[in-house]
Length: 137
Image 1: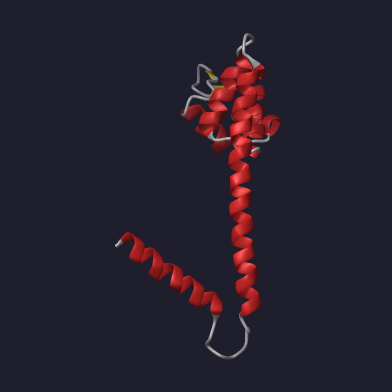
Image 2 (image 1 turned 135 degrees about the vertical axis):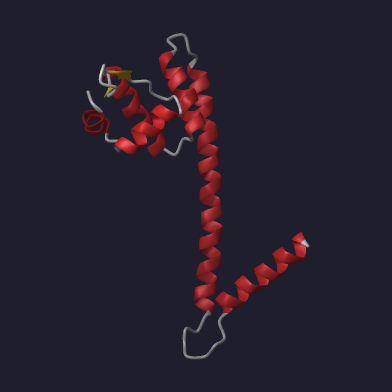
């Protein structure tokens, strides 16, 4: 398969496929004319990578997952540990986003949104800026 064909099969853009090749996640063969020649297993790897990235795994985690996927003697506990760590990071991000949402919701409710210049949203951001510059200075 050429890069256009494997892009369709895997659902990944050609640019992403070239990047994955550059960083060593996939290693397609080369035709005599120098064009990439993707095998079925390359397409499977790319589909796997697309799904792992869609789940938010980092490139390094994807590298580990690919190695585990290729290892018939792997322990599923190793895969589970990697997934649990990632799940924990997602939970942390969700908690941070919920905190941001609550803060912004409060500020939006406090702002009159009228013709006057008073704005608790801007005042809150200015306070954070001053507090951050005092903490770093």
